[in-house]
Length: 287
Image (cartoon, rainbow, N blue to C red; front, side, top):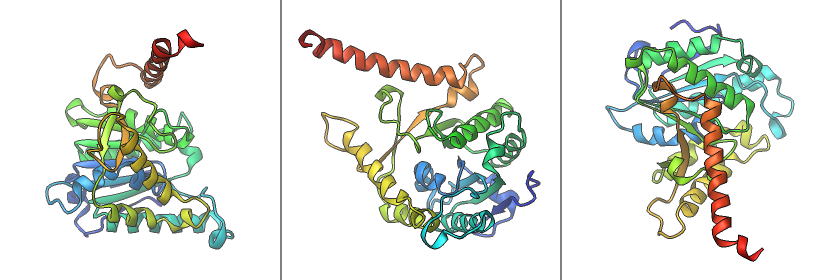
């Protein structure tokens, strides 16, 4: 497949021919940075792990050159960091038995350029070749600019596909802002219980970030457990690890779908109404 960046790659851990590796995809994660997939799309990775008829494919959009670096990575150039992060992502793909791992190698500044269409074109080509049933990407309520830009590119790319070629489900997953605040009826609850050792191995691959000053491995594991414990106040836990997402499927299938901004503002309004209503019922008469 010809991608727009000459430095882009499609890595296939089990060595299957590229066309076949893409075509077998059932679950596809599309993230901004190396390690985003392992944090936000673990549900898809686990669903496909050692399953002969289900395959997880990964797409990382940016090149990793702007990563933070301290300790042993302090003196690394952007080029060296890109090489390290690319190799870390390959390792994760091997550990997680991904069907393929595409690294598009776009600089973050390009991804965040509204008039830039190369990212959309790359994503469209990969989506057409892979034909996944489920797509995991970033939440529209994320606070990382590059994450939101990638999410927008994913929705545009899917909308550009023929209707019959669009995935059955598109999920916007929490990363740089959790989705605990979203009303429960608006959440998609992703059970990521089990295979905790695999999740830890996937997270631990990204040494350049962990040793570089961010304990993402501990933070992500903590959030998964916190989500499970605090999800329901009056029931015992049926899941011990949970990740939250938003169902973005209507935004890519419904012809009269709201804009992604209107969709997200409606979630915020429902949250506001929920908080205000509870205060009116239980606190306003005393204050």
